[in-house]
Image (cartoon, rainbow, N blue to C red; front, top):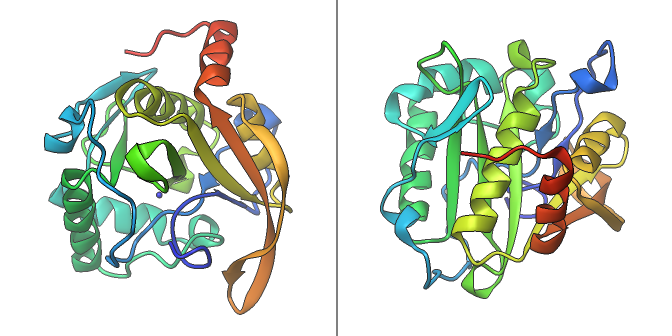
Length: 239
């Protein structure tokens, strides 16, 4: 879950009051909902995921490739005002989400990006998604984003899904650097990135156009070396 102003990846603000910072559930921008082509090159090594994404299991959730029957649940979960506030406008019909799912599968086959559906334990359909797309040759640098339905905020689903997806990216692509952008006012989202071990690098002035206004974003990054150090600290082996 863009041109820099209307699609893929950084963190989306959620104007919702949570009990504690540990209950934060956030959206990473940009999620690319349009089917426009991107310039990312195809990767050339460890490309098995381009033929089909595996099922990645984490704590009380799994990540898997989006399928057509996810369209209705994604429409319900991602089209609400609180979720869509800082991402590019999601599709407004089931057919629109079906086209997005088809586009995501084509881009995965081309090696340009992968999009994983977030399926909580006990659910059959995706209630959110994680997207990682190449923005440099050989997938050496990638941008990532995350969106999840508000009924699942504060459940721990964000950190479990984010860690699983980031770990997969570092293990199964050539990515050395993952980038994310967070709206400056989104203190909770920025805090979530810190929990993942991301490093704040600077302010991108006027980098997100939303509802006719340009918003400043914080640039965050995670590099492979730092990621494996962070994993050692929180100690969870991801399967």
